[in-house]
Image (cartoon, rainbow, N blue to C red; front, side):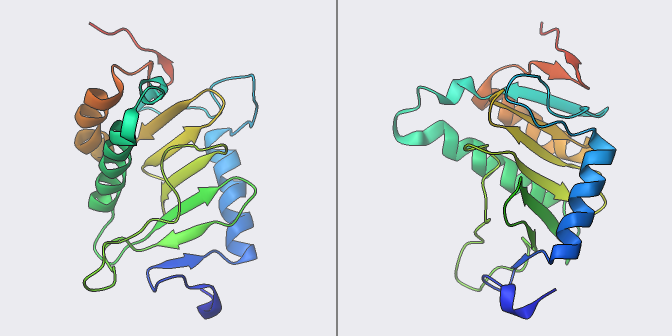
Amino acid sequence: MRKDSMINGTVVELSYAEHRATWDRWYADFAFRPSTRQFPGIQEPTSSLTWSLDALNDDPGCIKLDQFTATVEQAIADCTPEGGSVLVLDWQHLCYRVRPDQGIEGEPFRWPLSPYPDGDYYIYLAEDFSFGSFGHPWEHTVCLFGTELLAQASRPVTTILGDPVRRDGHAATNP
Protein backbone atom coordinates (compact mmCIF):
# COMPACT_ATOMS: atom_id res chain seq x y z
CA MET A 1 0.00 0.00 0.00
CA ARG A 2 1.19 3.45 -0.79
CA LYS A 3 1.32 5.78 2.17
CA ASP A 4 0.79 8.83 -0.05
CA SER A 5 -2.55 7.46 -1.23
CA MET A 6 -4.25 7.22 2.17
CA ILE A 7 -7.46 9.15 2.48
CA ASN A 8 -8.24 8.79 6.17
CA GLY A 9 -6.11 5.90 7.41
CA THR A 10 -8.77 3.31 6.65
CA VAL A 11 -9.19 3.95 2.92
CA VAL A 12 -6.20 3.37 0.64
CA GLU A 13 -6.00 3.80 -3.12
CA LEU A 14 -5.00 0.58 -4.91
CA SER A 15 -1.62 0.67 -6.59
CA TYR A 16 -1.57 0.29 -10.36
CA ALA A 17 -0.52 -3.39 -10.05
CA GLU A 18 -3.28 -4.12 -7.49
CA HIS A 19 -5.82 -2.28 -9.63
CA ARG A 20 -4.95 -4.30 -12.75
CA ALA A 21 -4.81 -7.64 -10.91
CA THR A 22 -8.15 -7.02 -9.20
CA TRP A 23 -9.94 -6.01 -12.40
CA ASP A 24 -8.36 -8.89 -14.35
CA ARG A 25 -9.67 -11.35 -11.76
CA TRP A 26 -13.10 -9.64 -11.64
CA TYR A 27 -13.44 -9.92 -15.43
CA ALA A 28 -12.41 -13.59 -15.33
CA ASP A 29 -14.30 -14.77 -12.23
CA PHE A 30 -17.56 -12.91 -12.92
CA ALA A 31 -17.47 -12.78 -16.74
CA PHE A 32 -17.86 -9.00 -16.49
CA ARG A 33 -19.16 -7.51 -19.74
CA PRO A 34 -19.70 -3.77 -19.57
CA SER A 35 -22.63 -2.70 -21.72
CA THR A 36 -25.35 -0.09 -21.75
CA ARG A 37 -27.77 -2.54 -23.43
CA GLN A 38 -26.93 -6.16 -22.62
CA PHE A 39 -27.82 -7.30 -19.11
CA PRO A 40 -26.88 -8.54 -16.61
CA GLY A 41 -23.34 -7.21 -16.61
CA ILE A 42 -21.85 -10.19 -14.78
CA GLN A 43 -22.43 -13.88 -14.41
CA GLU A 44 -24.34 -13.63 -11.16
CA PRO A 45 -23.09 -16.35 -8.82
CA THR A 46 -24.99 -18.92 -6.84
CA SER A 47 -26.04 -17.31 -3.57
CA SER A 48 -26.93 -13.99 -5.18
CA LEU A 49 -29.97 -11.75 -5.33
CA THR A 50 -30.46 -8.85 -7.73
CA TRP A 51 -32.89 -6.01 -7.15
CA SER A 52 -34.14 -3.24 -9.40
CA LEU A 53 -33.23 0.19 -8.06
CA ASP A 54 -36.34 1.76 -9.59
CA ALA A 55 -37.95 2.06 -6.14
CA LEU A 56 -35.43 4.84 -5.50
CA ASN A 57 -36.59 6.94 -8.48
CA ASP A 58 -39.35 8.71 -6.56
CA ASP A 59 -37.62 9.17 -3.22
CA PRO A 60 -38.18 12.65 -1.77
CA GLY A 61 -35.34 13.51 0.56
CA CYS A 62 -33.43 10.39 -0.56
CA ILE A 63 -34.68 8.51 2.52
CA LYS A 64 -34.84 5.10 0.80
CA LEU A 65 -31.48 5.68 -0.89
CA ASP A 66 -29.88 6.49 2.46
CA GLN A 67 -31.47 3.39 4.04
CA PHE A 68 -30.31 1.20 1.16
CA THR A 69 -26.77 2.57 1.28
CA ALA A 70 -26.49 2.22 5.06
CA THR A 71 -27.90 -1.32 4.98
CA VAL A 72 -25.50 -2.59 2.32
CA GLU A 73 -22.46 -0.84 3.78
CA GLN A 74 -23.20 -2.11 7.30
CA ALA A 75 -23.78 -5.67 6.09
CA ILE A 76 -20.51 -5.65 4.14
CA ALA A 77 -18.66 -4.24 7.13
CA ASP A 78 -20.21 -6.91 9.37
CA CYS A 79 -19.13 -9.68 6.96
CA THR A 80 -15.56 -8.40 6.83
CA PRO A 81 -13.34 -10.21 9.34
CA GLU A 82 -11.90 -8.07 12.14
CA GLY A 83 -8.82 -6.30 10.80
CA GLY A 84 -9.81 -7.33 7.27
CA SER A 85 -10.44 -5.19 4.26
CA VAL A 86 -12.83 -4.81 1.35
CA LEU A 87 -12.08 -3.71 -2.19
CA VAL A 88 -14.18 -0.82 -3.49
CA LEU A 89 -14.08 -0.63 -7.27
CA ASP A 90 -15.20 2.09 -9.64
CA TRP A 91 -14.91 0.98 -13.26
CA GLN A 92 -12.15 2.88 -15.11
CA HIS A 93 -11.51 5.12 -12.09
CA LEU A 94 -9.59 5.01 -8.82
CA CYS A 95 -10.23 1.95 -6.67
CA TYR A 96 -9.66 1.42 -2.97
CA ARG A 97 -9.00 -1.00 -0.17
CA VAL A 98 -11.00 -0.10 2.92
CA ARG A 99 -10.90 -1.29 6.51
CA PRO A 100 -14.38 -0.51 7.80
CA ASP A 101 -13.59 -1.54 11.39
CA GLN A 102 -10.73 0.93 11.74
CA GLY A 103 -12.46 4.28 11.52
CA ILE A 104 -11.09 7.44 13.07
CA GLU A 105 -12.17 7.73 16.71
CA GLY A 106 -15.17 9.97 17.12
CA GLU A 107 -15.99 10.02 13.41
CA PRO A 108 -18.19 7.65 11.42
CA PHE A 109 -16.43 5.54 8.81
CA ARG A 110 -16.92 7.02 5.33
CA TRP A 111 -16.88 4.73 2.33
CA PRO A 112 -15.24 6.25 -0.77
CA LEU A 113 -18.16 5.18 -3.02
CA SER A 114 -21.76 4.12 -2.61
CA PRO A 115 -23.22 0.72 -3.43
CA TYR A 116 -25.71 2.73 -5.54
CA PRO A 117 -24.29 2.87 -9.09
CA ASP A 118 -24.44 6.59 -9.74
CA GLY A 119 -23.39 6.67 -13.40
CA ASP A 120 -20.79 3.90 -13.29
CA TYR A 121 -20.28 0.33 -12.12
CA TYR A 122 -19.63 0.35 -8.36
CA ILE A 123 -18.45 -2.85 -6.72
CA TYR A 124 -17.81 -3.72 -3.09
CA LEU A 125 -15.82 -6.94 -2.93
CA ALA A 126 -14.30 -9.16 -0.27
CA GLU A 127 -10.55 -9.56 -0.73
CA ASP A 128 -11.16 -13.25 -1.58
CA PHE A 129 -14.12 -12.35 -3.87
CA SER A 130 -16.47 -14.48 -1.71
CA PHE A 131 -19.08 -11.75 -1.13
CA GLY A 132 -19.91 -8.30 -2.33
CA SER A 133 -22.18 -6.05 -4.32
CA PHE A 134 -22.33 -5.13 -7.99
CA GLY A 135 -24.20 -1.98 -8.96
CA HIS A 136 -25.14 -1.72 -12.63
CA PRO A 137 -25.91 1.88 -13.65
CA TRP A 138 -27.66 1.17 -16.97
CA GLU A 139 -29.72 -1.82 -15.91
CA HIS A 140 -30.37 0.14 -12.70
CA THR A 141 -29.84 -2.91 -10.49
CA VAL A 142 -27.74 -4.06 -7.60
CA CYS A 143 -26.62 -7.67 -7.10
CA LEU A 144 -25.58 -8.85 -3.65
CA PHE A 145 -23.75 -12.14 -3.43
CA GLY A 146 -22.32 -14.43 -0.79
CA THR A 147 -24.29 -16.48 1.73
CA GLU A 148 -23.39 -14.46 4.83
CA LEU A 149 -24.00 -11.10 3.13
CA LEU A 150 -27.40 -12.24 1.88
CA ALA A 151 -28.30 -13.54 5.34
CA GLN A 152 -27.67 -10.06 6.75
CA ALA A 153 -28.89 -7.82 3.95
CA SER A 154 -31.56 -9.54 1.85
CA ARG A 155 -34.54 -8.90 4.12
CA PRO A 156 -33.88 -5.18 4.74
CA VAL A 157 -32.92 -4.56 1.10
CA THR A 158 -36.14 -6.27 -0.03
CA THR A 159 -38.10 -4.06 2.37
CA ILE A 160 -36.51 -0.98 0.78
CA LEU A 161 -36.40 -2.01 -2.90
CA GLY A 162 -39.10 -4.65 -3.25
CA ASP A 163 -38.74 -8.25 -4.35
CA PRO A 164 -35.58 -9.31 -6.19
CA VAL A 165 -35.71 -9.54 -9.98
CA ARG A 166 -33.13 -12.36 -10.12
CA ARG A 167 -31.96 -15.15 -7.82
CA ASP A 168 -28.66 -16.87 -8.53
CA GLY A 169 -28.62 -15.25 -11.98
CA HIS A 170 -32.09 -16.47 -13.00
CA ALA A 171 -35.39 -14.61 -13.18
CA ALA A 172 -36.92 -14.56 -9.71
CA THR A 173 -40.27 -16.12 -9.11
CA ASN A 174 -41.68 -14.16 -6.23
CA PRO A 175 -44.62 -15.43 -4.18
